Structures are given as structure tokens and as C-alpha cells.
Length: 272
Image (cartoon, rainbow, N blue to C red; front, side, top):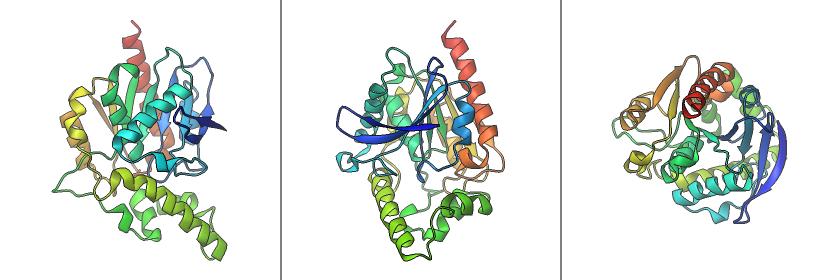
């Protein structure tokens, strides 16, 4: 994947990873709570059949402009601003959203369902079950993030802690700053609970949809998969084994196979 900078009409500058043939069907990946990690295996696999774009949310990594986004509507409109800035013309992209990216993707689809070729939601935030509350991510200690995000503790250590030496004062300082920016952005749509009444708008979501859930997601329990299916009876559902909330990084090939099969089938239906 190659990285470049993109600027939206609102003046937000963000980093975008891009890969795949330029004449392949466009696909936009909206990352999750932890951001775009260094391992791009899932994106590389999807890019074998699609022209993939993975924009980084403002407040994450090198992207700036988080002060311009205040609420859920801002994030959804920002998503469409990114689509327009990519210059896709009349080509409708498929949208794949993970975690908070899934929440944003669903809101985008509710606003303009006819502008998408397909929608894939990977362990998305956006719904709330009183009987199965989602853990407060803003109360988690640094060492707890890996436990809630990953099924494989060793994988968590490599991807979340490998690049930063928290024993080094400067490394710790930079981690605290970067983490505060990430959580500051996420908090605008997740705090105090990740419920912005999306369930009341899902009736508008007519885009062909695949809902994918990790079998061992400790952050958003699989009970939420059933709720998504109930609210989107036309959607297909898939469970991925041996994965936690970070399923694009724990089971990239199994996930890519499921996503590509779904999008290939939907493209065949909509183009005939």
C-alpha cells in the first residue's frame, strides 16, 4: 500500500493508504478504534481485486482537522467528503468499515444508500444493548487495550506495543499524546456510550450489506451481531473464528475471502 495526503473540500488533510489497480472496482476501508496499524495484509489481499483506499481519521496518525468534527453527522459527512475528494467520478465505491469505522460507514449508508455498491460492517459500534453493555474504552488502562481488542495476546503485543518503548520517557510521552488525540476523536461518537440512535435510521439502509463478527470479540460481544441482523434482515452475516475485535489483523485472509466473495456476488447481481 502506498501512502499519500488528501485534502477535503472542508480543508481537512488526511493520510490515505492506496493500493490495487486503478481500473478495479473502488473500495474504501474505514479503520477502527486503534487506527491504521502497520500490518496491511488484509488491505493487500482485498487490493488484489479492488482499488483500495484507506483514509486515516482526523486525530489519528498524521491526519489533522479533528477540531472540525464535532458529532456523528460531521463524521458521516466527512466520509462523503473523502469519497468526493478521491475523484471516483460516477463509480460507486464499496464501503468496508471496522469498529468505529463501521459505525461511520453505516451512518454514511443511511444518508446516501444509492451511492454505494456494497457495504461491509466489521464488528461495528453503533448499537447499544442494556443487557450486554460495551466496556468503557475510555476507562481502560493501556495494558488492557490488547486484552479487549485481540484474541491473540502475542499478536496484540506485536501490533500495539512493538513500535513504542514505554520504558523510555520520550516514547511514553509521545504515546500519551498520540493516544489522547485518538481517544479525543473517538470520544466524539463513543462517549459516554456508543449510542447515537443509529438504530432509528437503519430503515434507510437499502445497500446490500454484509455484517461480519469475530467469534471472540470481548469489546463488542457477538450478541450485537444478532441485533444488527434483526435491524437489517436483508443483510448477510458471517462469523470469523479465532479472532477478537481486531479481526482484520488477526484473521486477514479469512476475512478477505469473506469480503471478496460477498462483493463479487453483489457486483454480479447489480451489473446484470
